[in-house]
Length: 369
Image (cartoon, rainbow, N blue to C red; front, side):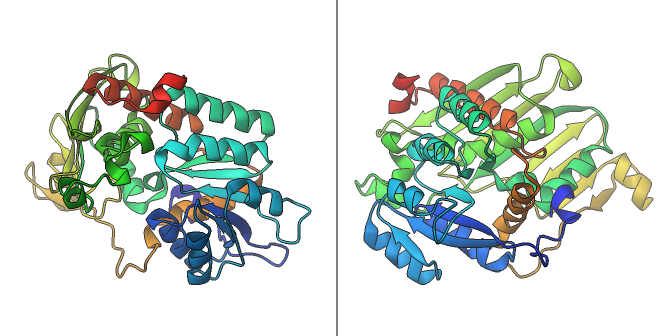
C-alpha cells in the first residue's frame, strides 16, 4: 500500500462500520471498483445508479448491492444520512464528460466524492469542483490509483537515490480493444469527443499525473498528436518543460497511444537511470548505473532489481490501495489526500487541456468555460 495506508489497518474496529458507497455507472470501471470493494473490509457498496435501469439492476445483482436506481437524483435522494440505507461516499464511474456534473451534484447533496480519472475535462470544471468541495466541506479525490500503488512508492524511493534528473520519458501505450470497432465504422465512447474520449484523456493522463506527482506542475507544455476522423486523438506526445524551481532544466516526455504496444519509462540523471515497465502500476523496476553498483558491488554498469512482487492478482486488486486510502481518509475526517492533493488533479487537467488544444481536440465542455 501507499506510505499512508501501509501504517493503517482499514478493517473496521469494534466501533467502526464500513464506509458506505453509492456507485454511479455500471460499466467496466464500476465493475472493477466493485471487485475492489469485495476485497476491502472497510468498504461496502449500498447502491448503484445507471442511465439504464436494467444495467443498474444487473450490476446490483452481480455484486450483491442492495439498491439500484435509474437516475443520480433518485439515488442521492434515497440514501441521505437519515434514510434507512445511508451512504457516505459517491463513486463517480460515469463517462468522462459527466464527471464534473455528477461529482458536483453529489457534493451539493452532502456526500463525499471519489471521481474516476480524468478528474474533469477542463480546468474550469476542475476548479469549480474543488470550490464546491470546499464550500460544502466534503471530501473530494480523483481516482488516480497510481498515487497509492506500491510500485510508484518504490519509484519515489529510487529517485531519491539518483540525484538531479535531466530527462524523463513516461510511456502509457496499449492497443485499444475498441479500435477494431471504430475501424469498422462504429463510434465507441473511447473515441467519441462528446463523451471526452481520446488517448490523452484515457492514457496520457497517467503520464501527466505521474509527472506532476513527482515534479509538480510544469512551466511549459508542448504537444503533438494524430487525430481520428471523429475528432479525438489516437496517439501523441506531450513535452513538459520545467524552467524554474527544484526541477529547473528537466524535460518530461509523455508518450500515449491507443494503437501501439507499450514501451518502458525511464528517469535519467548524469550517470543513473531508473527504468519501469508501466507508469500506471510499475512492477518491473530497475536501477542502472554506479548508484546501483554501490549496492551490488558491480561498478558503473550495475543493475539493481527494485521490482515489486505482487503474485497472483485477484480481480480489482489494483484498486485496493486507492480504496483503502479513501476509507482511511474519510474515517479520519480528511477533505483531500496529501498523497494526491486536489491541486495536482487541477494542474493535470490544465496540462491536458492545453495539450488538447495544441493538437486540435475540442470537447463540447470547452465552450462552457
